[in-house]
Length: 111
Image (cartoon, rainbow, N blue to C red):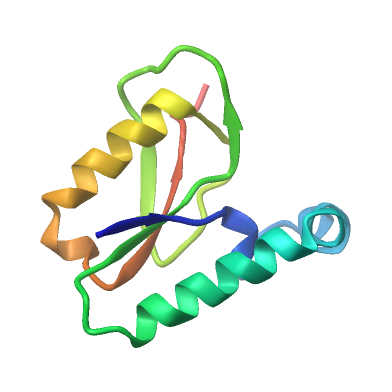
């Protein structure tokens, strides 16, 4: 099973001070109910016996897909990602046993 979450659910030690002190708190205040629900969903999955992978994208765009993306297991990947590339990542992790019972940060390719 692949579940879609969001990057701000996971606090990454590598996150910039600017993001940690300004952007993250602002986003979490505005979307507090959404992130609370995502945290509950992730907690239930982690306690389940199911084979699951959680994808945590950053900001989603409507730009055309590039056909590629960056990914990191149990870490956030900064940037943004086209919805088409996120869909590609979701399909790719279905066949990737190394992501089972892990959260995967995904973002579009570097520019």
